[in-house]
Image (cartoon, rainbow, N blue to C red; front, side):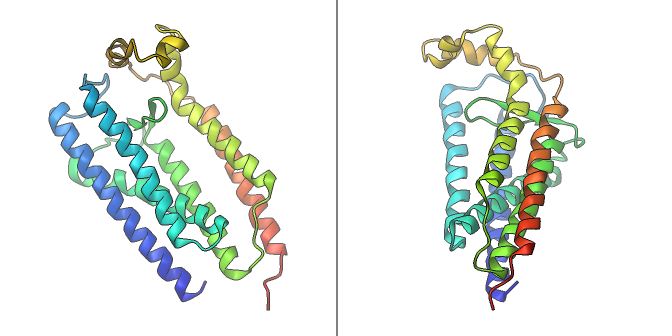
Length: 241
């Protein structure tokens, strides 16, 4: 790996850690306001403008992480690698800073709200950390092969495994909450803006009970298989002289 690549990785890492701290700071403020006794399910009722702000903040976070990936990489495959690397470092350090500032989570199996887009994602803290470590490994594999040779590629089969695996992981995070909502509201009612206050109020009674590790690990296994295929294939391609 050349000095320029190492320098890029260093600054993408620094950017992602700083973003992780900003994310933590916002959560610290929100928890002081809404959960002064400490965060726990069920959720507290918050105003619609705060919900909208949180939704837009998460969208802005994704744009910023994608932006650093686009700036850091020269090729599309590199941009993808730096994006997932930045996302993973940001997510891991978010939890590190939460532990340092609030002594939370209590354990790797503590439940957390992971995301809001397009619906509530919940799961034990361990699950997104596993995802993040997998993303870092994939990102380093891609960055290493791109730095070593000009013709490093991801085939359509790799992309299919990564995409389908990601969708399965998302299902693991959103399945229980989605079924909870559908037990009270129909899909048209959920999509309609008319019942949003009722839906928000009902959502606040949600208590996560069981994370489907089998679904999650199925998605993770697809990611690992894709990484294995990428490594084996690119090792066989000789580096240009």
